Image (cartoon, rainbow, N blue to C red; front, top):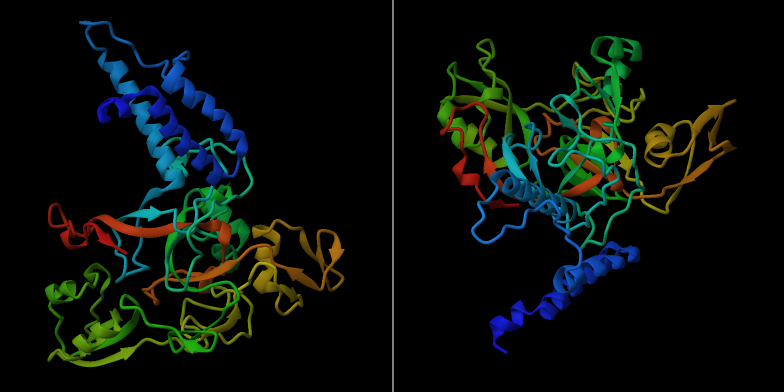
Length: 447
């Protein structure tokens, strides 16, 4: 038997696909799926059932039906792409400038789900190729909901990793203002005001929350502190990654800095504002290397970091900084220390530290939390301690002074993690017209 005959032999094909299928079932961890071997065997060997019943079988010389061919192609694409999106990779677009100058607004990414293990769909009734919205309406049904489960990955999330995750506060969304943090707006105004002006509200399941991308700066069990705008973890100053930038006041001798020079440095000139009364730029985001470059320009007189000391600069207040309690003395640049909850660890609960863990207990881990007669009650029982049921992470944007991150809404639960940005396959600048809007240098950039 030749190699060609061997590879086309029905028993060879059946054996090959059966092995792959069994490996997939073992990874999935649900042995009921082994019954699918019957389908594999029939499709390769016995061919008793027409598994592609929608596909027309043509007789010799019969004219092809274009509509049927398109239907077959669409069904095949939906099945294959859905399978790939669920278990391997998913497309994602950077929506904001919170990660500049590491990831740019308009970067289109492939998100790797294998590294940390893919999360099985909890809301399977979803229109293909959508996440949570289509034509302004929800693109899914909650008729079927399954418990959270993550398949085995190669490793855990580490400090310094880029992470795509579901926005923790995204379980409640204002229909007329979906990009706004509902809970933040309620704290700073009122629930009635938020709903009457921007509602009604939409409740979303955990796996249908909007996706965010940030850098993980602390993992479960770490103690984190921000000092003078720099991150310290477990008493050690964290590495300042090349893309991390802070906001600086850049004073000039009176004139603008050439926008082309700023663009070559990777700055988003659309978000820069020149104040002639300064004169200069009151808030220019710069990396450490860019600071030296700007400071060396002949037209630049002074470069000073915009470090926020207590009390926070307007419009920030204690109501905008997690855990939203007065008297912490925290700002975006002087924050913490704060401990990141770890699975299996038990902490004592007091009225003072409860704001740190309240949402974890009540929302992320699904317990009934209340206060009664000065005591903390969990699931109907008085509690003075709590044991965490999953790991949590602290995320921050690399554009540290233009990022709504864990400093503003708290911890990211492990079950919210979607995947790791792996490669930029397309990058466009929304402030330019085609073809000048294409950032060719970022094509197929591995992260």
